[in-house]
Length: 260
Image (cartoon, rainbow, N blue to C red):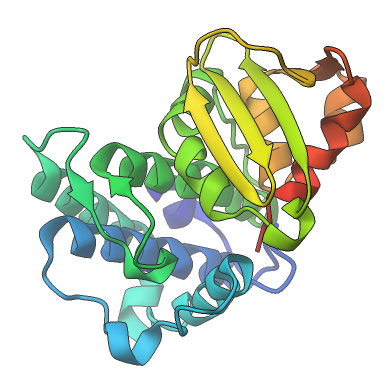
């Protein structure tokens, strides 16, 4: 990622995010790295009163507002050296979290006060931001970018169980009762159960009856989840397939989980 930003020929070029330039995506990442370092070190780097939307704002709207705000937090000289800035902030995160247990509880107030996060979840979130936004920058900069299956599996196993629950569209889930068996090739395996407006996501859950089984390649599912690849393309390439008693329910999962 650092090399990608250093080599980007034009930070003002359009990126893979329609409303952001390459520089905007880099600035957003730098803000993300700072924010997660802040929650791990509890140094108060985020102005919780001035920057955070009210707690009653729906999850997708809350994150969209913060995403829009993040691009303006890195300006001037810092924006001109985004690659170096990202390297420095990434190293700071690793230094601050060195020696902490993966299950160390952390609080990220921009997700809401009741979302249980751990260091493992936060690290997975930082990795997901880096992988996905690296693709956005590469598309704008005309540079190659690959997301390996092992890295995608880390994101799906470390952060996806927590964040899917947080991003549940409660209106879409009202009155719904569905159990999905999400089988990621090479692991992990997630049991996703929606029951009358609530969701639980359990990694490597005991056997049970499922309505729909989704077997997915890790990189393709990561890109589909973040709307970087259309579902039809993943299916056509053999990277996603549905089975089980009610395979036609597979598209419902994408509608149940809100994406900013």
